[in-house]
Image 1 (spheres, rainbow, N blue to C red):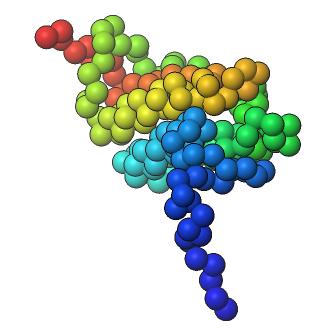
Image 2 (image 1 turned 90 degrees about the vertical axis):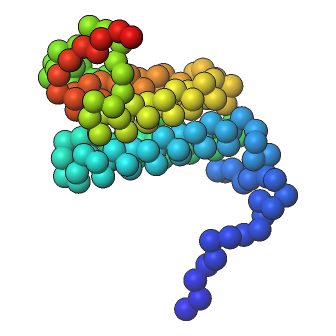
Image 3 (image 1 turned 60 degrees about the horizontal axis):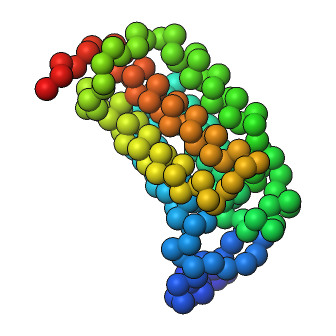
Length: 181
């Protein structure tokens, strides 16, 4: 049985196909936004490896990474086709944002908050989480024009960056203040 090839050659003209049809330039706002989300998801894979599979940090990351597929589906859909999307399956719902807030609230009780600016690098997992957070912030900036309200993409990414910061501090296990330079 022959396998389908990974390449189609359709993107050789500088365009990419979208969910529910249509093509756009690879450097347009939709691919720029979901591409940044894809990068964040890849960094979260590094978080999983550093944290160890089966850990609570790993489980939180896997859950988020699955939700990022939903978010990318929404970003990979032309606005005229977004009525075809299904909340929690192919578009971000307000409940997804609330789930992130609940995780933040839980983790926030497990460490003392820093009293000064945090310098990344106190813990390997925390450093990867801080990198993931910065990539999510970029994805959020790109998503402003790609998914305007009433989309929940931007609120989700905003909350996700907060969660990644919180997870990094939780992984550090303490709020050892870093002296100002």
